[in-house]
Image (cartoon, rainbow, N blue to C red; front, side, top):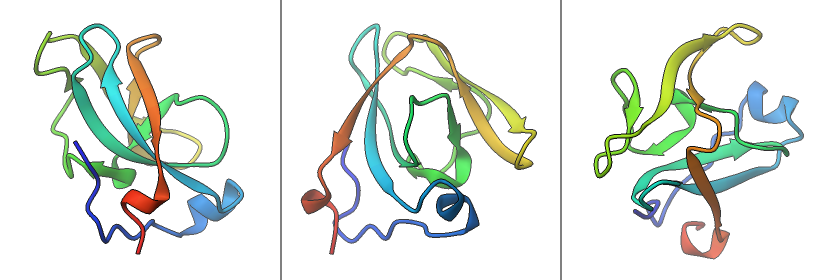
Length: 107
């Protein structure tokens, strides 16, 4: 799973509140290694939730995020109370993240 070559990172009040630095992550299932998503993460720290408006691939998620290969539940839908944003709460130790270098998707 790869991000599009001409990916424009979202720059809005949420990314600016986290320092304005964004990275693109490849998220894989820890159990089987299947690629699950490409995600724009704003700010430092571990991955706790996936905001739906930051998902690059897949562009939409209906309900839970489940690994297609091993059927492990990876994310549970909820509304992040502090920002009132729809997100997926990432199950602890269910995913592995890898930073995708900017030269593979930037303009």
